[in-house]
Length: 348
Image (cartoon, rainbow, N blue to C red):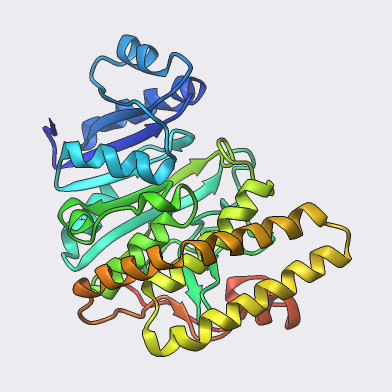
């Protein structure tokens, strides 16, 4: 058990991450003086991650996991052994900035009903752009599709300080996720069966079903490399996106909506698959089919998880759900930027 000196543990899950630690860990350790402990969790790396961190960063605490079973499972295992008031789940390929931490900590202290939050996330390679996952605040539409301020599907905005506010969102990026440790454990933590992608959305949805808020803090800025483990646009990423988005709905949606939404989403996925098939993207079509087959095969598991989650449901917090279809607005109506949606999230 690691007992933190500060009330916050910055927990970095690392798989073969030496090159990222060389780039980014010095700044993270330097900024630790603003009020957090740094813990690196070696997720069964095959490089010299553990020895490199131990030798070069003596103030960093280390945990080692013997078998890599994915991002979600790595954190699920590690956080059972870390005692703190707040966890910050920080991916190894993130660069922090000066004073990135105080606005996040202040927001959590100011809003005791806020279970989790994230900073503004920009793209490391093109630093004026928002990053794909999280960006300037993350939402879900009425059909369960995810999007962000600053990134709707394939259109990514430049950061022109248009999203400097503090707002309530539906989910916070797992790449830099601040979460209350007691609430994290209360709702069961990250679901290890997700492996990777959308596990943080599942966690946030459970927290919101328990009546808590999720926040975006615009004055805190970090940069994300992205795609360092599972690359953007890869069949593997496509598989987890289609599979895990359906699982999200099964586990967390209200029953009266689930009975029509789940079959409707299967239909929409089928339309997407047929479109890919007719345009010659045979591998992508098969990937969607494979994702669906996994969901059907494991449906009893998710229905049991849904039943387990029911005991945490109090007052469902629906803030951060866009009341229209983002797919329709983007692909049919041509609304490429958040400001074109004519919908405003709630201020914190």
